[in-house]
Image 1: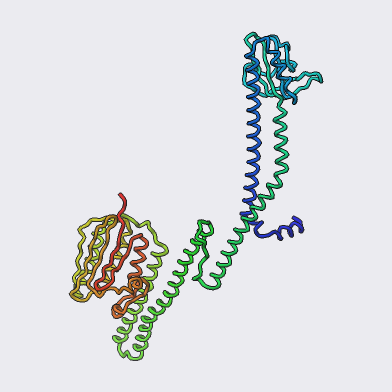
Image 2: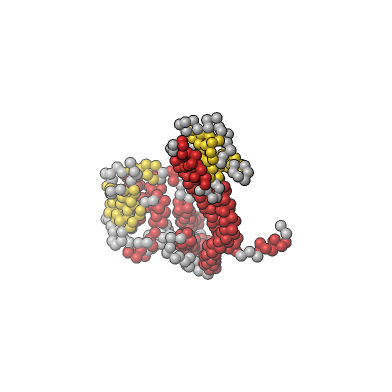
Length: 460
C-alpha cells in the first residue's frame, strides 16, 4: 500500500471504519440487488405467461374453426400485427406451407406439446429472417399442422430496459446504502463514545457512578444494565475488602498484642521453668486463636469463590441434626443448657453433607454459647410445600432488628458477644455455605433467636 493510500485510510472518519457501517452498507446494497433481480424475474415470468396465454388462445381459436376459415383467420391475425411480432403457419400433413408467414415447421418444435422456445424462419415481402420465438404446434383432425408463435424480442427488450434501470439506479442505491450505514454507524459511535467517557469517569473518579440508560429495549441499554450490575457487585466487593482488611487488622492485632505483651512480661518476670512454660502456653493459645481466624477466612473464601458441587448428593437431614446434637450435648450439659432435637421427618435434600453439617454445627454452637444457664436450645425439621426447614431456636438474648444483616458480616460482634470467646466468622461461614447450595438463611430478631435454613426438596 502506498503512502497516499495510507494517508487516505488514516483520515477516514471513525464511523466509516466501524463494523456497523460496513455491514449495514453491504446489507442494504444486497437487498437492493436482490429486489432488482426479483423484479426482473417476476416481470419476465409475468410477461412470458401473458405471451403463452395469448398464443394458446389464438391456437385454440384457429384450430376450432372450420377448415375453410382457418386460412382467413391466420391472415386476419397477421394483418392486425403492426409490430410484426406474431407468427403463424398452416401446413399439410407432409409439411408443405398452406398459409402464414412461417417458411416451414420448425424441426425442434414438438407437435401437440406445451408452448416452448424454438427457432423459426419468418418469410414476408422483405426477406426471410430467423428469430427466436415462443411457439406451439397442433395437429388438426384433418391431418394439417397449425403452428402459432410470437417473437421473443419483447422479453429481450424488457431485460434490456431493466438492465438500463439497474445501471442507472445502482449508483443511487449505493449512495443510499452508504448514507443509511453512515447514519446508523454515527448513532452507534456516539453511544459508544458516551459509554466510553462514562466508563473512564467511573475508573478515574467514583466507583459509585453508573452508566446511563434510556429505559428502552435497546442492546446498549441491556449492556449498560449488565455493566451496572457488575459495578454494583464490584462496589460491594471493594467495600467489603476494605472493611474486611480493617477488621482483619483489628481482630488479629488484639490476640497478637496479647501474645507479645505476655511474652515480654514472662521474659521479665518468670523465675522458674514452670513460669516460662505457662507463658509459652498462653502464647501458643494466642497464636492458635490467630490461626483459627485465618483458617476461617480461607474457608469462607474457598466456599464463596471456589465452591465445588461435585460432592453433592442425597442427604437425610434427620441424621445430620442428630449428629450435631450428640456433638454439642456434653457442652450444653456443662452450661446447664437443655439441648433437644425433634426430627421425626425423614426428609432428603441434595447437598454437600460435610458443608451443611458445618453450617448446622456453627448455628448450634452460637445457640449454646449465647443461651444462659437453665435455658433451652432446640433443633427441628419443619416440612413446607416445596422445601424442608432446618430450625435451630434458643432462649438467649437474640438479635436486634438493626443487627439482622450486620451479624452476617465478617468479624462483626455485637455488644452482647464481646465477653464471649469467638472470631465473629461463624455466621459468615454459614451464609457462604447456604449461598453455595442455593438455600435460604433467615434469622429472627428479638429475644430468643430462631435460625432457619430452608432447603428445597429435590423434584421427583
